[in-house]
Image (cartoon, rainbow, N blue to C red; front, side):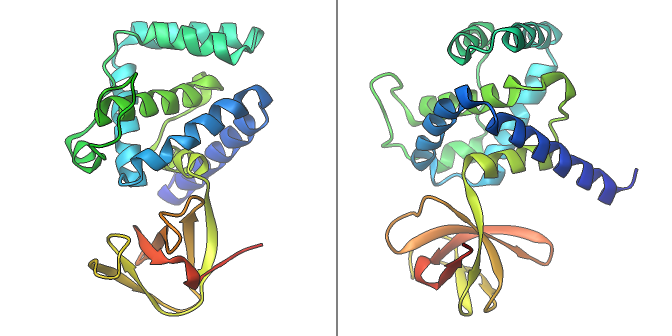
Amino acid sequence: MNTKLEHYSNKMQASTFISTINAQSELQTFIDSLRKLIKNHKNLSISQQRDDLLENIQLIQKQPFLSLQLQRILNIEQQNPDITKYYATFKDVLEDYPISVQLQSKRCLDANYKTNMFSSAIANYQKYLFDLLFVMYCFNFDNIDFTVDFIEDYLKFIHQIHVAQVTTKISLREQATINSSILVEIPRNSMVKFYAHPVNEYWVKVLFVHHDIEIEGYIQSIYLKKNS
C-alpha cells in the first residue's frame, strides 16, 4: 500500500473511531469535562500533545501484561458500559504507570496552573494525558492502529477544531500579540482550522497549511469568517 492510501486509511479509521465515541451518550459528560481542561494547557501545540500521547502508548505497548489487562477491561466494558466503573478500573490498571511528559512540553506548561489535588502544572498535564488515553482505549482497542495521523485527528476532535476562512491577508503570529514574531503570511480567503475556545476576545489559535506543512499560530479573530 502506498503512502497516500495508508494516509487515507488512517483518516477513515479516525473518522470511524470519532463517530463511535460520539455515539456513546454515557461518554459525553466525560469528554465535556476533558475539554474544560484544554484551556489550562493552551500553550501546548497539537503536535506536542500528539508526541506525548504517542510516547505513552508505545511505552504501554512494550509491556504486554499492561496491554492484556487493558484488553480484559475493554471486554468487560463492552458487556457493561458503565464509564465511571470502567474509568476506575482503567486507573487501577495504570496506577503504577508513570505518565511520560517530554521536556519540550514541560517547558510550555503554565507553572501557575495548580489545584488542590494536583500540586504542579506537570501533574495536571499528566492527568489530562491520562484522560486522553482513557478515551482512546475505551472503544475498539484491539482494532486501532495508533498512528500519528490518527492521534492528531483525535486531538483535533477533543479540541473542537473547526474550519474557517480569513477575510484578508494576515500574519500568523507565534504568540497572541501584535508584537509577536510572524510565522507566515496567510493569503486572503485562505482556509484555516481554528480552535473553538479563543485565547481571549481578540485572538484565536489556528492551524494553517503552508507548503504541505501544518503550522500552528495566532491571528486576530475579527479577520476570521467562520463557516455556518
